[in-house]
Length: 181
Image (cartoon, rainbow, N blue to C red):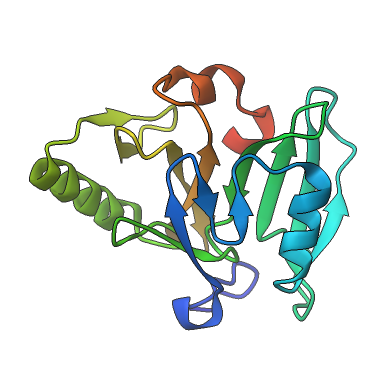
């Protein structure tokens, strides 16, 4: 779907990543350091664009080398020691990420919520609402949100490592994540 200034890549044009909560996200391990993340994403055609706008985090934006879009498809946030803390996947241009058979990125938010609820019911998982009001299964270690795509909205996701502490993302996530358009 191309909506002019709000392009949305179809799934067929996105990298296809699998997510194992708290462990791996596509080519990334959730315990990587900044240099390792840059190298892993470069091997998959992403160019790093350091972002010096944050004082709390070391953010690095990644865009596909073969695209004219200046918008980042993936944003990684690192602690000051270089350890990966959060990975934000853009809903319009980011890779398609699948967790437990559920496609998470670029989805109509209400359809994604229905799938999350059905999965939780079938597998006896708890459900919770994130800071943006979006529903997610306990244990997935991610927050979901929606961003504008012309007259529509599509889902984005923030991935993190928190163990059993689901407040980590609400309390500590980079402010920029919640203002994603």
